[in-house]
Image 1 (cartoon, one colour):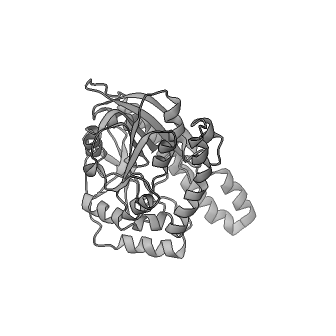
Image 2 (tube, rainbow, N blue to C red):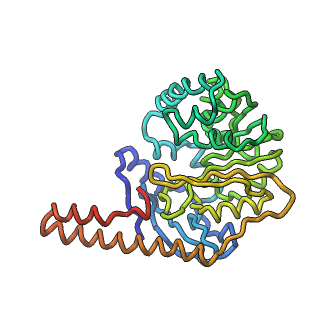
Image 3 (tube, helix red, strand yellow):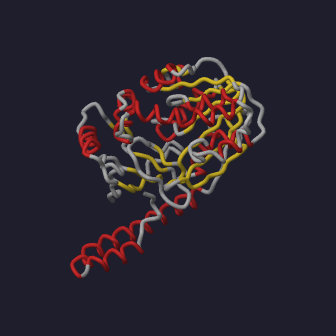
Length: 348
């Protein structure tokens, strides 16, 4: 089934067509990362931008992911070229980063002056994008050293430094790591294989969903975790997440928790909240030698997401049918009826 497309600029359309025809991008068919099953149900055959990708649901455990999956070499090529950022955010990257940096200066100065890291963020001018920072500081955990894996230009590093923590970041994009260093932050151009030392708290904020093999990456990062691993990731709760080419995995709270706890962590906090059109999961894990694997009912998980899919499937085709038929009769009636039958089960 086709995923509904968003409105794209001419520049985005050109980049999508370029990526669809790029011979450097190669794919391999894979088994389920969580349970190893090769029994999968196809959900969507393109993403929201029009990339030729197939999203599947594992019929055994309920994990959703792209299959065939982009090879690791292809993924490295995609991210190192920054092509994906130019498609997701076609505006001027330098201008965007500068504006974002300036926007956070007031908040950073308030935190440096002794402001409450919970209140300052949640009463500030961007409650959503820095939710992880506030959540971590509401959990009363003891930590001093912080490593942000996939740190972008360093905003999380700035936040933790502003409350007296020793913070650094690792970022695969040379452009973003260079930007952070120019601003005086300890941002290293690299990723999981390049991390040095151990840290009380390791962050992975909007990283896990981009990885070709999240388990392998978590296992590499584990040796650099002294105490805690905090992850923020989009999750499917009562609707599907938006399907976009830069996300390889589409976790639920259950599949996400089981995969991380299989890597030698126990879950000590998790919750989710709706931001814009997607749900986001926030989870704190503690490093452990004990087996504390999160358990859930595989059958119920699969049943839940198949039900969501068929519900969306029905709405999609009813809306498509009404649009064709009613437009011929009366365009105004068509708009009113179609708006009633929306696609909230998927997201925008």
